[in-house]
Amino acid sequence: MTARRVIAAVDLISYWSGKAGAWLIVALTFVVSVEVFKRYILNAPTAWIFDFNNMLYGSLFMLCGAYTLALGGHVRADFVYIYLRPRGQATMDLILYFLFFIPGILGLIYAGYDYAALSWRIGEHSTVTAEGPPVYHFKSVIPLAGILVMIQGLAEIVRCVECLRTGAWPSRLEDVEEIDVIGTQLARSEYVDEESRRQAMEGAHAIDEAARHRSVVDDTERQSRTP
Image (cartoon, rainbow, N blue to C red; front, side):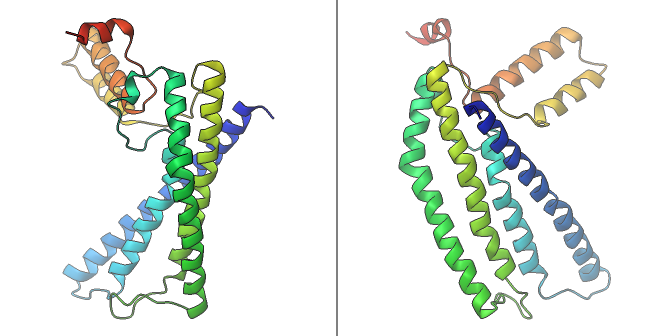
């Protein structure tokens, strides 16, 4: 199996794990809506709903970490990175992955496993509210999410090595983005002509590409910024 196939396979795992985790937002919306109805219409609030909301949102947040990494969507400082060529970007990424990412995620997996195992052993329930629900299921998400992020991180390291070898970044999976929504809205607007729409989309794509740290300021632009 080639490096690019390994990257694609891991990207796909992260992609679908994120898609599966994203359904928790539907459950969270439903639970909150029901609780609002019970609290303000029936005057019968649920004591443990605060804990349950936190568990749903926490699980959503953690399970989508690998998905976000696969799409290059995590926030990072780009004031230096964006000016580097792909090989320079890959070198910086590799250094940061080995210095911070791997130790940090290994710590998360190790501590999260111990955290969840202890919770299962004692049958832990939340003490934040009365009638607190069990939390051991929720705490099991911590090491699981850490493992998914670690697997994707290893794929990112392979991606960096491949970039160093070829001088170009391997392609990433694509998903529906806010830019697609913008494009749809502009296409349906009767107040925006085709040329304005094209310029707006080009600008939006350039900003998005820069934010994902896969674009490089070319020499002419760099020179124009030099006094």
